Length: 124
Image (cartoon, rainbow, N blue to C red; front, side, top):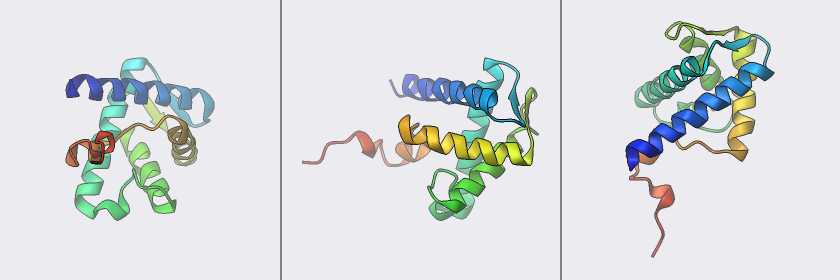
């Protein structure tokens, strides 16, 4: 069941990336599969950043630091995923748009796995 849950999260993230590619100048995704791969790479890079620097410098953290780290992660993804292109301004705008979309459609991160999906646990 957890594999299916993560697969759905990456599909939703890919759709969000495609939507952002439609809205944001300087941000382009060539296909759904490129967006899916970019979503996986962004998640992995975010995990690496958080593992190296801790929760305070996490791209999943809200605030200016999280916003900037998210933009850097998005920008670096273009060097790993072919068909995914972004300018510096495009990465900043994409980070902003993704942050706004995340307010309405939150995509849970690997932090859920680390905490045993504590967000879905009921208190007794």
